[in-house]
Length: 438
Image 1 (cartoon, rainbow, N blue to C red):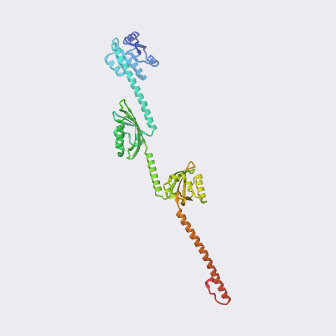
Image 2: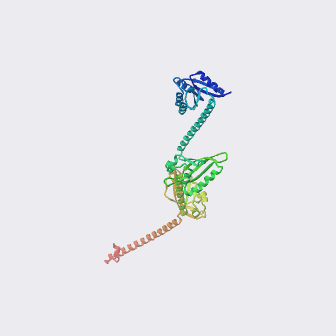
Image 3: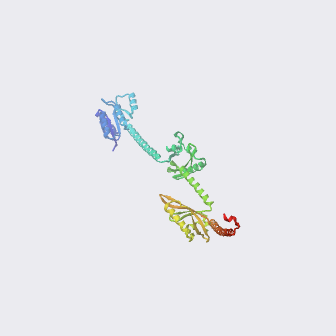
């Protein structure tokens, strides 16, 4: 059984057509063919069927090989087109080849027909495969561009054979470089790694390329065009051949600068808070809205005579039975219910060692979605202040009693002086205590 071949023949002679078909069968082809003589018939044949090859007479009445070639080109179809004629000269043949014909044969001399067809079919298949690959590449590149635009990451691809490093368009917006400055070389990436990170990162990625690993990731600083620094998380996947050698490496650089700044600001804030806690005499704590302590600072050792962990579990045991504690507990409940900051209140506590102390409690609610989710507070030992206040109160009370007693004696003396003056006046004598009369 011969090789199948679908041939569109442009020829006005049935005899010449049969001659061609006989030659094709002799060359081992099982031929399916159609003969046309006009442009309209050619258009119809090309529309209705798929063809492998066109064989065309150079000169037909009203329609020739060059016109047929123009019809084929206008349709954008890539089919081998071989001209056949017995009356054409070499110069005309060359012009026809330049116009797009694939080959030119002389009628009656068909020794080259089979090899010419085989060659043109092979080249046509090669062109189709190349076009399919190019179309697939265009689709892949379009998807790549869309994916790169859909993310804030800088997508890159490294080819080990050429050492080229291709960048997505995001490299311009994230790093600030204009396209002409972004070189398709691995050295360009190398040069823009922060000097303090350079050796570590380059050594790490080179070691990875020589390993059998598939996934690489690192975090480093990258220099922007304006001289500022971008903090980068770089992740990549490497394709390897059968020997484990890198074929290509595709990665994505994520700009985490804002996250790094936020982390640094949080770290500094936490450090300041810890410094305040370390150098404060007050005990700090946090608790949930249902009174579960989640943190107690080390000052519990000085104030409550116990470790923070014990204070977190047994804090209610430190409350004394002093009735005044009820007012403070009610204030704490009110803060939870309203989410509002309450004035400081005082509690009497009994420490783990049995000491009776007074503390000032200052609490602030943490509110989310109009609901109190936690309480942040501090305890300050005010025992000495309370003792001092009590001593001052005692002294004031004593002074008041002395004042009242002294004021009473002075009043009685003044009354006596007035009585003496009155008696002397009754006897016609002058008053002995003139100051008592004012």
